[in-house]
Length: 616
Ligand SMILES: [Zn+2]
Image (cartoon, rainbow, N blue to C red; front, side, top):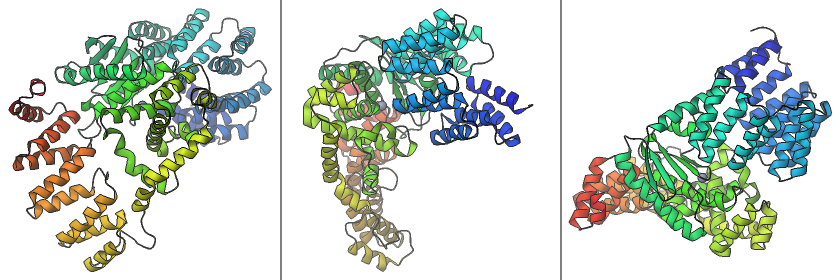
């Protein structure tokens, strides 16, 4: 640790190698000594870029306030604008960097990347020539263009561009490391290993990403592979004996059904990899551990998912995730990897609903709340909503609703035409005009009307009535009076139900919970009204009511493994085989490694002579 310049340079080197924690400490130390050291603010911006975008942008802007001639900060903002799909803003930021130095090779490399993304070949060549004018052996414009092509999901192009960078600069470890990552996503693991090993040889000073990917490839070497047509499904040897019986048929079914619907035999080989360790999934997907919010990913020919063992049972429905990712294969390939985020996610969630109607609906109540609060996202802002933590769930659900509207209005043919239009490189306005003869404005009007019709009443029911504090302590009599006054209010009925149950007034409590369940029929997760009803009914000896409530809940609350286990118990006591089948099928879906559930399922199936299930 010395002067700010040295300390900052050290931090920058660590950041380049993805050592975020250490890099951050270096910049912090500098800023404590000299809070006006612009490059350290920029360094903080690069460290924060992955975890807190607004903070990162603020740090870069702070750097420019102190030193407007810090070209790297302009270029950081340009990259961020590109990531957020705002190319015009990116262009302006690059222009500011070029005002500082008209020959800045980084700025021209970014211009090359932009030109490539937008299919402007002459501009690409010009930008490359500008960099060559400064350093004819530099591969940077190709490497940067490759990185942005990869961020735009165009991995085959990224591979070709990175190879070009290596031709010019054969000993650049960054280019080899990048090429390795692009090849992983293009599905060529053998070639990826060659590139990553080369990157490692060129730079033994610890590139974490390269190191992680090489380790992961060793892990994958031990996986078992199951080939079927043009798909290879890979899974951990400990999981394969059970998981193969679910995962492989599911992938086959997805390819068959979606292949027919979208009229496409996807280009293969398609690689599906299922990871029992979430961090392995994250490294396969991003090169780094973490990525806690994601359960699956798809790059066009590569699908990665968490196995049911990667998270506690009931945390997620891995089958819904796998189905969702398989749908991305189709929307990505049909659009030449150019489908916008909202459309590809919308299609994938919509496809979940085709496989099982309950799968896409778990966010319905959450959305209705947001809708009631006036926080529904506009169609034109959906892409951006995927990049913000607070809105990402809404973005998925609303994209699904948008796709549902498109299919209602234009049929599956319309959806295919729209994907093809994007595949020609058209932007949303042009693609909608060409494929569907419509505009975003026209769609938004229809969308708003649909939201009002479908969620208006639900949103109202979810609102807490003004002047009622549902958390307050009140006498049972007061709660009863409130429940009868606010019959249309879900929060009042739920609060009254809980208070009356605590006070021992079972009958009134059940009336309130039943009212809540009818107001919000898909209320799910912990504390939902149907679980409460079942509990109260069971306590009063009304087992058939308890069974009915749990049956109704399990039918839609498809990740709730506790509810399924409870239903199995009640159904067993009542000798209700249909309900037992529903319950054990759900347990086995969520936790295929629960062998007692398998045994029970097998017994029911055998008794019914339903052999295919019994043999599984
Ligand atoms: Zn998705």
